[in-house]
Image 1 (cartoon, rainbow, N blue to C red):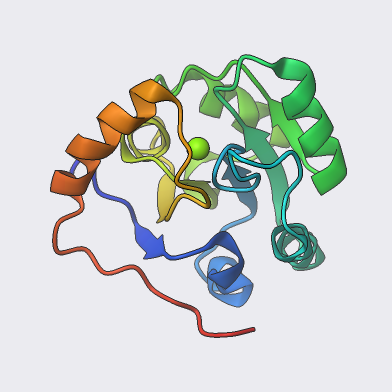
Image 2: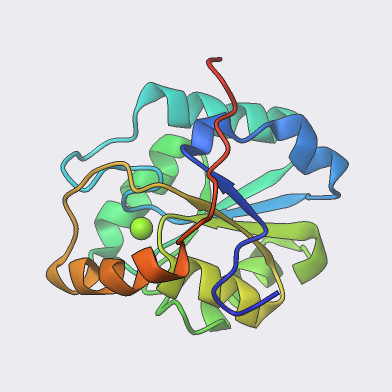
Length: 169
Ligand SMILES: [Mg+2]
C-alpha cells in the first residue's frame, strides 16, 4: 500500500460501520477535527458525528482527536464536547503526534485507525505511523488556502477511488 493510499474510503464519518472496525481488531480511533468532525464553516460537530463517536466508545473503542489546528483551545473544546481525548498541534503528516496519541490511549499502531479528510496530512501521517487509515470526504467546501492547493494533488491521487456509502442510518 502506497503512502497516499488509505485502508478504506467513506463519504462520511458516521457511515463507517462500527462493527466492522471492531471486527478488524480496532481498539482505538484517532480522528481529525476540521472537516472530518467539525465542518470548516461551523463551530460544533453535527449530531450524527457525535452520536457515531458515542457508538464507537459503546463498542469499547477509545477515541482521540488528533488535529493540526493551531487554535488549541478550540480543538480541546471540540474534543471535550465529543467525549474524546485530544492531541493538538499535531503537525501531520509527521507521524509523531499519532505516536503520542497512541501512547496516551495505551494502544499499539496495529490496533488503531486514523480517520481524516485529507490525503497529504491524515492518510500520510497514518501510513508513516503504521496505523490503518480511513479517508472521508471533507464536510465543507471551505478549507484553508493551502489546503485548497493540496486538494488539487489530492484529486489526482484519488482518481478512480470509490468512497463507500454506508447507506442511510
Ligand atoms: Mg481535516
